[in-house]
Image 1 (cartoon, helix red, strand yellow):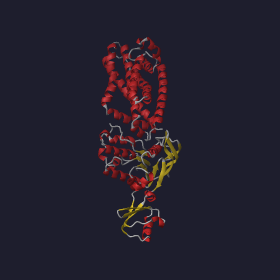
Image 2: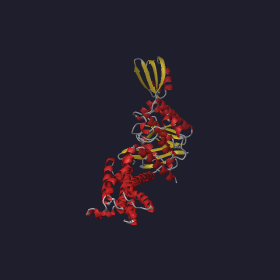
Image 3: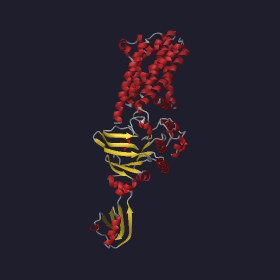
Image 4: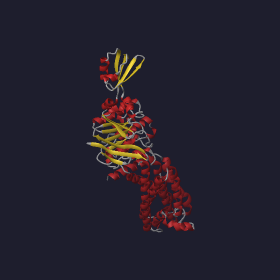
Length: 246
Length: 291
């Protein structure tokens, strides 16, 4: 109970800080919808295509926000004196990881919602009530490994490198995972690795809502990546602690 | 009851030894000043008490547990080292965030007014001056209303008025039987506020006692008069005599004995007076450097 209360306290503070920086928040949340309008809308003329394109760009939105915007934030923050003070407060690091993840998932959901709004306004989307509910659930679940991936990058690289590395991972993995271009149109060498990527698993999970992907298999892959990135993030944290607070 | 127990704490950073086996026990209600030259081990000691550093050897118990345990830290409040705060928050929001993590926090408004920044509650942290940030840092240590407060140089960077307010707050906390450990460079501050002074030098405790004992133990006094010099050693006196333009200065730990010797020697003297060295001088003598 105490832990939940603490996660709430830390998440609220993070939210408050973010909302005070609209120049950061607005582009972060709106960009994926903009990309969707530019690159996907022209192709989304039939209900089936429109659904698939929208689902792909919800994945891109969630990954962009969770991995790129939130996860790597730790790279800059862990070097600040404020971090040293936070370590003297009565909340351990797991609380702060959880609060950061919660914030990232909410912002990711918001960015995904923007894509949905644009898609519904300008393309023939054909999803029913239960499918929308499933989309909300999957969008949040699928974001979890990517927050942890971002935190991993944040702990294993320095502040300057982290943003570039995360950007590269985001772009390459989204492409190779078949989110920008459908998997069937990927170059041959990439189709060999694509099925094993977390981005592909997230895509498959969302496409399954429209009857195209494999939900349960994708959930297993995403759970495996969650375990992997949790471990890597925890090891990275310990490594940073060893170096900074020996 | 013990709030802090350090037992034979050793700590090295690579080849450089920061603490060479420090033992320290602090009781409820004690106000302890930690003094020492830069690099003596003050900060390392505080960091160990806050759970920020691991020990090489020895034991640390704070408020009945290990400070690396988050629950134990509900009994500890500390000041941030640098004034590096989240800029986009209001003072009120930052304090409420810290207060919410403690079981019985202090009142936000009165904590701010007590430190002279009551009018700043709704200001953004990013817009505060350096001095205001220092006051805020102290408010962050006080707001949790903890059993033990660890303050790292609480009055550095403050103006005279604010410094007085901080002294008053520490005195008030002392009346409430809270335990405060503060590191300082200002001997007069230690003398005025602390019930106990601990001097760390070269990773070891060089002195541990009341401010008065520190003065008594290390302060030397000088006997100054105009007249003829005399030889104190023939009266069994541990003293040093210097003469400058007819003024004789006798430096000795026991000025009373020196006066008796002076009279017994039947030396001509006028304008006799005794000068007590400051704690500052005592400190310099002890650590062989600057405070």
